[in-house]
Image (cartoon, rainbow, N blue to C red; front, top):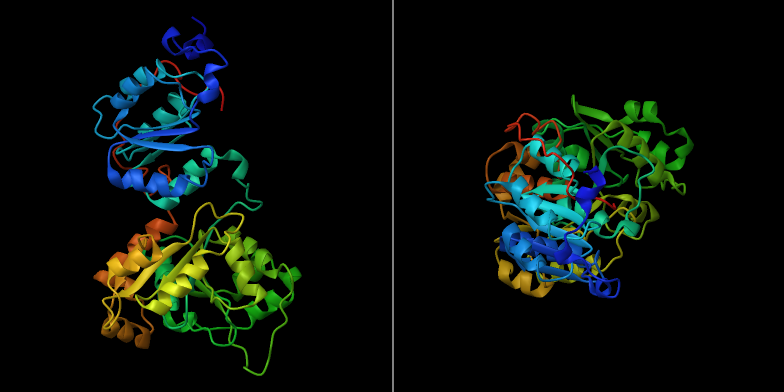
Length: 420
C-alpha cells in the first residue's frame, strides 16, 4: 500500500461535499475542568467560527466521531491512556484525512512529543497542567493561522509588568521576576526600567543606573548588540539591568521607533526582557506595551484597583499578543481590602496569580536591595506561578530534555496531517 493511502478515511466517515458544510470549526474532548476552562478562555476569540469543548477522553472522542462529521480542528486528551498511540490510531480511522489534530496529555518527555507530532502527524502536543500562555502561543496560531504574525526578529520573550495604579507593587514584582529568570532559572535576562526620572527597579536589585538608556531612546540608530552589552549593568552572569536616572529638570526627547529597535536588540542578547512599564500617556510606554509578547497587570484588592484593572483590560492587544493580559492580584489579605471572591465577581474573571499581603517581609527585602524571590513563602510561590504563566518553555527545552526519556515504539506511518 502506498503511504498516502493510509490517510484515506474509512467509508463510515465519507460524506458528500454538501454534508461537510456543517463541519464544526474546533471540537475538543478533555478530561478535567481545569483544561476545559483554559481552552474556553483562550480559544474563544481565536475560533469565531465556533468552539465546542466537551468532557471526555480520547475513547469518548472516537465514539462520538463515529456518528458525527469530522471537525476542521480536533483537540483530544490522552491523559491516563495506557496505550496512547493505539488510541490515536483508532481515532485516525474515524476522522477525515484533512483534520488538524492537537493533542493534550500528561507525559512530559521529548520522545513522546516527537512521536505524536513528527511520527503520527499531529500539529502540536502540550502537556498538563495547561496554562493560558501555552495554549495561546502554541494552539492559538493553529486554530486561527491567519491571525498569527511571524516575528521579524527571532529571539527572547518580552514581558511588561504594569501597575493598574501607583503603589500596587508592580516594580517589586518586575524586579523579582527578572531575578527569578536570570538567577533562579539560569536564563539570560535583562530588567528594563524605562522611567528615566523616578524608576527604582534597579535599586531593588542593588544595581546602578546609567546614561545609556537615554542615549538609546534619543538616538536609536546607535543601538546594536555591542551597544546593549555596554550599557546593561550586570547583576550576575545571566542577569542585567538597563535603567536610567535623569535630572527632574531635563526631559529626554523620545525618537519614534526607538522602543522597538531597543527591544529587537535586547531580544538578540537575552532570553527574557522584563520591562517595568508604568501606564502613563507617554508614547514610549505605549510602544513598549504594544511590542511586548505578554502584558502583566498588577492590582490590589480595592475598588480603585478593580476600576483601573477593568479599564486596562479593555485596551486592545498588541500585534504579538495572542491573549489578554495576565492579571496579578497582589497583597491579597490587605487590611480593609476586598476578598478574592469579591474581586473575581467584580472583574468577571479569576486573577491568574494571587500574592499574599507580606508588608514586613517585602519591605525588608526592598530596603536591603535583595530579591524576595530567593526566599521560600507565599511571594515566591506566586512568582513561580507568574513565571509559568508568562514564559512557558516548550517540551523540547533543555530543562526537560533529560526527563523520562523512555523510547516509545516508532509508528509505522503518519496517521494525521494530509493537509496542514
